[in-house]
Amino acid sequence: MPSTGAYPPGPRGFPFLGLLPRLRSDPIGVFMAAANGYGEIVHIKAGPYHGYLLLNPDDIKHVLQDNYRNYHKSPLYERLKENLGEGLVTSEDSFWLRQRRLAQPAFHRERLAGMVGVMSDAIDETLEAWEAVADRGQEIDLVDDMMALTQRIIVRTMFSTDLGAAASVVKRTWPIVNRRIGETFWSTKLETRLPSPANLRFQRAIRELDAVVYGLIADRRRAGTDGTDLLSMLLSARDEDTGERMTDRQLRDEVMTMLLAGHETTSLALSWTYVLLADRPAVAERIADEAERTLDGGPATLDAVERLTWTRMVVQEVLRVYPPAWGFSRLALADDRVGEYRIPAGSLVFIIPFVVHRRPELWPDPERFDPDRFTPERVAARPRFAYLPFGGGPRQCIGNQFALVEASLILAKVARRFRVQLTPGQRISAQPLITLRPSPGVRATLGNRRR
Image 1 (cartoon, rainbow, N blue to C red):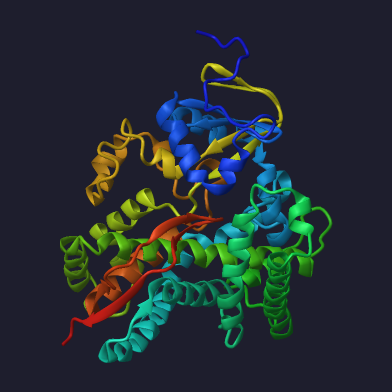
Image 2: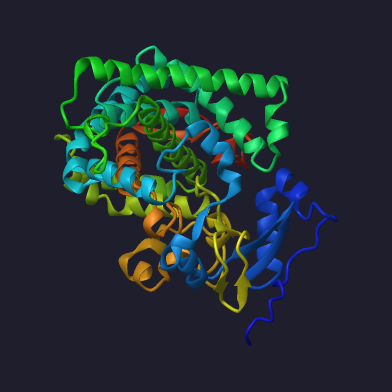
């Protein structure tokens, strides 16, 4: 039956504020309850905005692919744009397309093949450090160690350098930035401008991150460009119309985006992997067996990583259960129609992978951890937009294949040398900030397989 212009059904909220107070305190809970209590399109009132939660893969495809030009990143992303600037995550239209085309060659398969050796060397450095940790029976925080490792990988592969002492600055400041943006995602600009202790800490952290990134750019300008990594490509690029090169501010925005987005999500996926494997030893042993057969001690290659089929399916299932990019939203630029309902210009559209990945009509027994969901046959039988750990459509994450290769190689190399054993008694919860973080962390000890 065609829509009469009425809103779809949805949960009732507070006068004027709608569900905004609940979204601030428990966004995933709000979206899960809405999905379980109403239809495939749910009305969500959030402050001044009318929003539409989409659960049907066809409707999601319409917004992210078929009519994507009608949908910009929502005003909720202003907090990201204020700090990441006009990078690939936040920019729009022709500027985004230009930057995407500049960056895309850095992620082509032949370049990815050349990066696997760099990834492997960085992983080996971490594993060597873990040997001493294992000997002492010392506890580690997997979130911290995986953050450090994936940061080292993204800097070496994309910028052909190491951060050195500046790595500790990123390690210390990025959690402050992540937490504060997540805490204020649903807040007004006034709340984020007040000179509160939390805001002042956040502003200091941004200044310190800026100093690291501008230093990276300045070092490369002095050294010259060789055209073999992402930073060289960006430094060498010229505007097709004006012939001008990118300004330091434009470079800063892209480097900041790649540095932070490029290591955060993968490290969290790896951390969640060990949470999920803690009471599934058979899955962990199968990863180790596959790694022994496939990584025979020779140089790591992309072909070898692509033969880690079980390990990759484990990664994909982890990304289903705990997608680091747990939710996103779009702003309708003009009136549109999705399913039976009119989407007026100025409305928000919510697409929440954490929720979509738990729809029983798409994922039978959705709370069960089952890597076999990602056999080629089962993937082919499932709607493409039922699985969204990297988004979808033209704005799909540019580094999706890089991340899958990186995560698979890390898991396999770790499994060959160590049994990762979570410290008993932890209460780990999913904290939905910009990304979905295991809170308060993931503490573990290491058992050395070689002994």
